[in-house]
Image 1 (cartoon, rainbow, N blue to C red):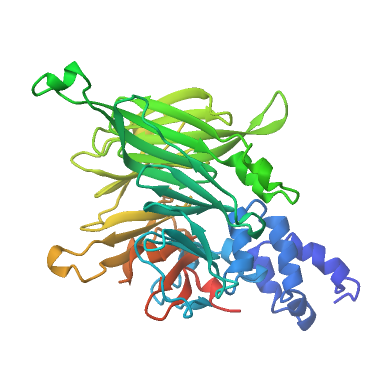
Image 2: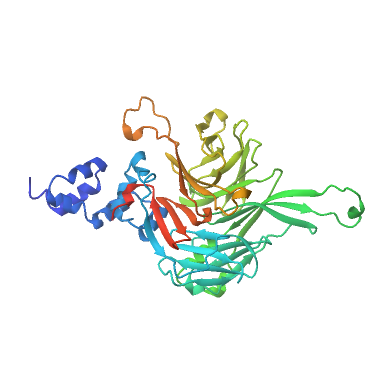
Length: 470
């Protein structure tokens, strides 16, 4: 073999532009090639060159066990069978030990891959831990009972019983800062009741029913039918998140940040809400602009509505889509950045695109995996759909926590006369994951993060064996 060809200066560019089979075959050629292909520095270069635009996966490289660049490249090059190779074995790795904390609640909790927050109803505070500092519990005084908590980027977001959104910063430099966003009924005699919520990307989307109570002479009329209106309220936290992330952010000026807000009046019960941020290229200015898709639907009328807004929350378009789940109930509906819309029922899944205009353009996939289970969260990919679900204990089993299950469905397009094993359809998987509270489990791109209240350890279980080796 030529000595010139065998130098790292020549080999590195060749390997960086090679596909999976070439790289794996090159490992066995000689020791020098093997040495180059086992260096983390090479795989970091390969990852950045061949797999750009993976923001959520990039974060995991610093937060999850075994997420070296070599393993992440193996994961990105894996076939469908390799992507779920650890689902049955469930080999698990510890993220952190929280055994010094004895007051972790199981009522209002949010766990992420790098942190955890829970509500303490006795002190009316959020308790917040970052897993790289497990002994440092930071408290944020809420002052009222909270019904949910979540985390977006650098924000801790709570919603209290009065439907006020309470914001705290994860950044230590702003730990005294907080903000309250009030959701008020539009009528003086109105009263809000929350139906559902979605906290995703930089948006908080809430659906309400506003009951309008009779006043004055109306109260004297017997059997007066109470009026009601349905609303969807959207808050855009994008500018606030950017300001909190800025190195020179001034805490006093944070209160002057514009928080976008819009109220969408609707004529149906918004049982399901979802949102996503979509980036589109403006051909006139050659810049990227954000658009917001706000989805809402009832559970059984066969219609999904998408409201499209620009990043100033100005309505651009409203689209209605029919779905055809006969004698079924819609458990979940979501809209995604590539335009895909998922409609998940108890018996089947319907997949279509925001640009589809006809029902016959929709794909239907059997999904008889729910039984008595309730859908909790999903990860959507072009080929595989990961679904976390749980069963609530019956009254006679009230001391039990219920059961968390994971289902994986192959939603890839059917390929006629497929003879390649890695492209063949995968049979649906539905397996028990744990018997812990469902709020202690979090789907991330590559697996599930779980807090075990018995051992007080936070564990990570990868879907793929790509992340089972250091």
